[in-house]
Picture 1: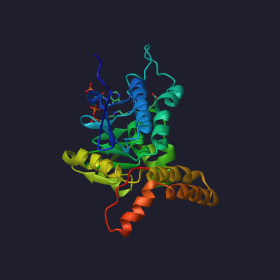
Picture 2 (picture 1 turned 30 degrees about the vertical axis):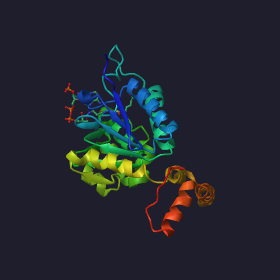
Picture 3 (picture 1 turned 45 degrees about the horizontal axis):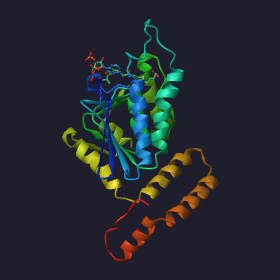
Picture 4 (picture 1 turned 180 degrees about the vertical axis):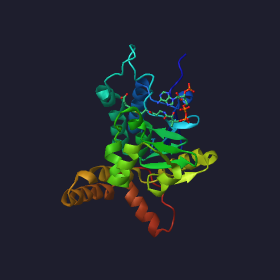
Amino acid sequence: MSQDTILVDRSQGVLRITLNRPDLLNSFTAEMSKRLQAVLAEGEADETVRAVYLTGAGRAFCAGQDLGEATSPEGKPADFGAHVRRVYNPLVRAIRRLLKPVVCGVNGAAAGAGANLAFACDLVVAAEEAAFLQAFIKIGLVPDTGGTFFLPRMVGMARATQLMMLGEKLPAQKAFELGLVYQVVPAATLHDVGFGLAAQLATQPTQALGFIKRLLNASPNHTLEQQLDLEGELQGAASRSADYREGVAAFFEKRKPAFIGK
Ligand code: T3D
């Protein structure tokens, strides 16, 4: 039986997804991407899922494209345009469009598409030994998986240029200092912290978290006027939610709110 390249389990309102090809540092195959796309779609449809925790098995998070698969049987490099559109672009769209928080637990190297997959998530927690690597240039490719969209916006044009053109390893602590990573923790505690963060988010007002994601997704391409309009629209929707009523009631009753995610 072939190995399950994507492991999935659900608990405490969290869909935990583990990339599982540890021998090849969880490098991506087309089959793996298809399965991850399906799992993310299930997470979107399942109301009991209120957050996602994405991580990798073994010593790496993800080494990007499986370079063995990326070569044609004749040994000639394949044309990757269609491949990127089919394998990577849908993953970025799925993560950004999922109106639930996605926490990424980077347990080791995150290279190429693996690094940019992590940066597409909402919050990144990294093990002390983890490192991010825009490895594309080392093999004559350009960054994909949304990296050229997210990185300049997250760290500025100059730093993004350095990372992409030089392809140097960015250690977790440096990534933290740049704001790319929320927390750096000892490897032994990574999943407790990363999953714990997702579980905590799963108790929060899910709809409002989803609206924050919509606002942040829209922000880079909006004028101030457009963004103010969207804030008004989504604040209106948030104020009609059960969680808003619960939040205000809990505030006045001086108790912890019990949000239901609706
Ligand atoms: O196809 C398209 O659509 C184009 C899209 C491309 C998107 C991309 O992601 S391009 C970038 C692809 N990724 C890389 O270029 C990274 C390649 N890997 C590395 O640079 C290093 O492995 C790491 C820095 C990630 C980790 O280094 P290290 O020294 O800790 O591990 P290692 O010894 O290099 O790797 C361990 C094994 O995993 C090794 O196999 P072996 O020798 O034990 O049998 C190595 O070949 C394998 N491995 C690592 N990365 C990949 C891989 N095998 C296939 N594909 C990989 N990407």
